Image (cartoon, rainbow, N blue to C red):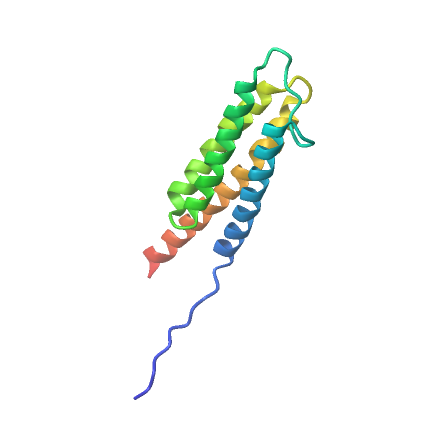
Length: 133
């Protein structure tokens, strides 16, 4: 009796999405810590901004990190949620700072956007591959 083995192909896009997603989760955790403690990475808030804005920004970053964790299992849902959170985080960060609002929006929103986009690309490629098989 001969054993049959299926050849498993290495999924580069999925691997890359998982690695970038893990780095984005770590980055989001560092940003949340910095925002809540007022550390080095914290944005310099506008004088009229309250602490509530920083807490909302931290909660949105945490939701984005949870969405990236969910994307390990459900790429479409997690990727879309992370992408949506990144847009909201970027808008909040741009409105939260006085100097360099576009830079703050890019710095705070890009990790979630890049990782969420990679998960969506991976899900799309997997769906296309399953449709051809």
